[in-house]
Length: 313
Image (cartoon, rainbow, N blue to C red; front, side, top):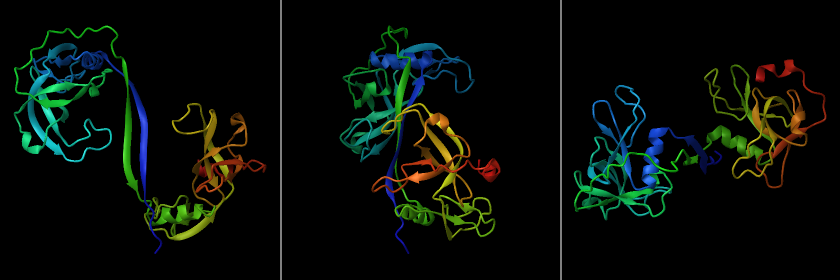
């Protein structure tokens, strides 16, 4: 049996969002070493603040300063910090109810070991040296046996408030394509495209999935398709992607390879972006040592008739 492939993969993108008045005040406050909560209609103070009462759905706007000291309500030890976590040495994840708040804030506690952490222990915020208006302005919590801090009575009004944030979303994982897609990837290394035919409906899936999603039966019969195909639909990309060395605008298309029962994705090159069209006949372009086509270019054949690919849109 051939070896099944696996490889580490990373999905990463920047998530940009604007802030409403409550979140803006909270993050701006962290930049200024002030912790703000929001008061609900029944008098509770929520930290971190939310814009709507989670019980009544009432809109909330009454900002309240709370102290940078508080109490651990529960915790879990993290013996092996991962990339991007608040501390690089082992630490505790803690829920801390800050003095003056009725809810708890999740963050890291810098402690020498799990024996040094307990529910009910007093802690205080350790502020980051450089603050930008983000939750990371709280570097972590630290044990604290001193006098509890008192709020200064800040109103939540700031000059130059933070109005938006960019959060990096990232997922690291190990992907194993399984038997069917391992065969597909191995075929690509020989500049061939292989799918699998469903024994019931006879549809050829490319890339193969190991089973027909329509009939629910396993697939094993390999079928070589292409290399030429037809553009079924496409979009023009005008925003340059991070770490992708392709000048915009460019065209990304669904391409139905000859003999395939559905279309796959591919970039279209060798033609002005505004001349790409449905029905355009294309062929793959490979670069040296590539494991998949770099892009597809026009073959010079007449466009395919719509009826030949309408079921693949």
